[in-house]
Image (tube, rainbow, N blue to C red; front, side, top):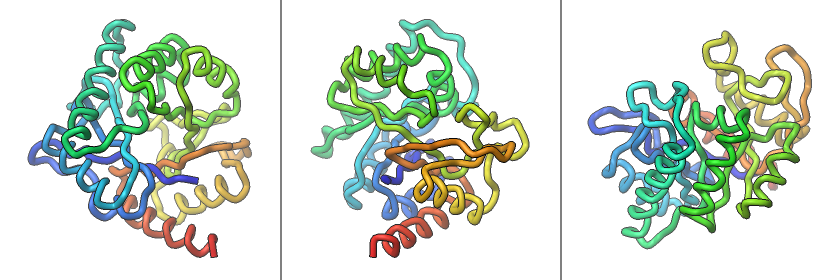
Length: 246
């Protein structure tokens, strides 16, 4: 299972995440595109860092919400969302062209990601924007149990999907992420994060916040780059994967 991490989320003089420590340990770098975080120079540096470590590059677009880090809900039209996505994916694609590389997937950020998983109209707009802006890119979506309608929509629109599980977030009884405002929504120790990852990879399941077990079939696993344990977890998982392979 490929490891992905949200990267390039610094902005100007403000630093977020430990990109230099995490990048060597991951397979896929989801790079912020300037709306919820990042700026052109940060994007350039993050693309260069990804190339140095042979890490696949993805666009990480979000709502236009620098102050809220893209984690606040936006009431916008389909036309606005479609334009915002095209703008952000195109910006990162341009920076990638400068360095003779390409964006290979798209992973929406924060509130946009959570909204599209529960709102069919928003998901359709996201899929269409990806198809029209970067037709060769796959779209990362949450690995929820009821995935067939999502697969069918992607087939109709004509885009590839990757299903994602989360290392450091608690799940509810329907397979969605628990709201960050609820106690226990984010795992606070490296041990808890690594334990959840091992369960997902070895057993194909996750334990919900209420203690129930849900099936979890995923293609990629997310480590949040802004988490306090990102580098520790990334290094531990890299070592664990190498040992498991041997």
